[in-house]
Image 1 (tube, rainbow over the protein chains, first blue to last red):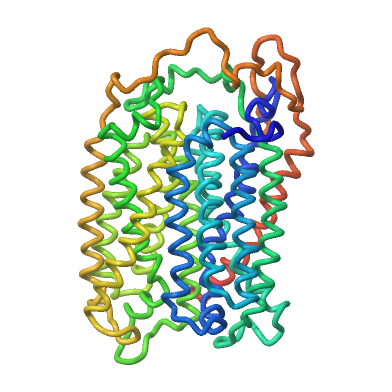
Image 2 (spheres, rainbow over the protein chains, first blue to last red; image 1 turned 180 degrees about the vertical axis):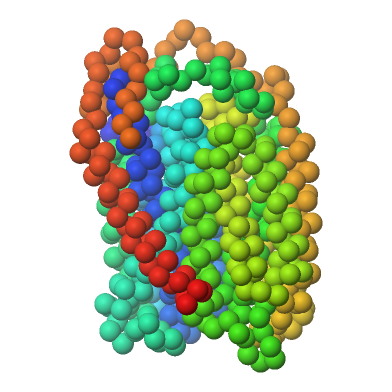
Length: 472
Length: 48
């Protein structure tokens, strides 16, 4: 599928002297916008009342979006790698913004199916393409620090919710003065949510297009000053060869890493999904909890911070200690923390908060480090496409995590009456999952030579013909 | 923060204006700071 010339990869090959530090903000401009997907809870109740629907019927919107994220990242990954980050970011912006506009129309006209189609399907496609759009480019611009580079971008996905949550409350307050976010129990009108969708859509259009138009790809022979690729190759598991996306999924390494990501994400979602009620239930005596609702909301905020910070800090750390060891930390230390949470979590608030926060930082770290792990194993050739296919693990975990936690809690009692002991079976299931992930990570070995792409010939590629570049 | 790329062949070189880099970082940094501020404010209820 050809793209218009102004979006083509050949048009954005950077000339010598281009400053690579313009690329992370381009990536962040996209990820900060699509990270809004984690802030849907701020208008969930408003939509339930507006459509007179169940929580499940509204919750499905988010589920459709996450499933579409996984599918579109897998399906369009090769297209993204072939056409470059500008085409991908532009396309992502069109889908993501269309999702908001169609969703807004659906809310105004009280057509729930339009919200499913808009935010769920169109927005979900925008999410998937947008999520993988800068990853391969960042890895190529920062071959010396791929973990730092992808950590910065994927941190943006966590940061997007931090921005969208307070901004959405503020905007809904403007559109519906009767709604006061500071007063518990007030709910914005449906039209306020429709106005919010319209406003966010237009804001995101500006930001994402800015990212699309400043992004550049490095020339094929470009490397940072003072960077010696042989120092990277010296690390175990790191290859200088390349594996195509089609071949990558035939390797045991891909599926072992898929298992690692699935286990890490499922375990993290177990806490994220239930964060606010969980902290109250852990410190419940009879009908009342010693943790107030406002404090529980603060706990959710703290988890968001650790989710975001973990993406940057742990992924950057992986550049120094290696990808396999950092996943041993995420999964191995994660097992210990989950056991502490299950056995000692209800003895003191600080123990609960600290262990949960570190677990969530590992959850974020797992997302941010995986592109660099893929680069180490499969090279840079189609790392975006391989990453896209790996993200199906996220979609699967998005279904499995809540199923496990909600299934266990449903069997133990009713919401509002649960206590710490009711969570233990779910937490120990997560311990088992992390153990499976830990073993899968241990089994990862260098990829067999039979999957390597042939060495490049002397024929110049599009990316290696920067004389055609029109970049500044 | 500036880290110019090494030269590649005999292509004409370019210079990325520092102002553009600062503007790009501000465009993503200011909203992020707004989000961080509000989240820390909410999280402070945990320690209040």
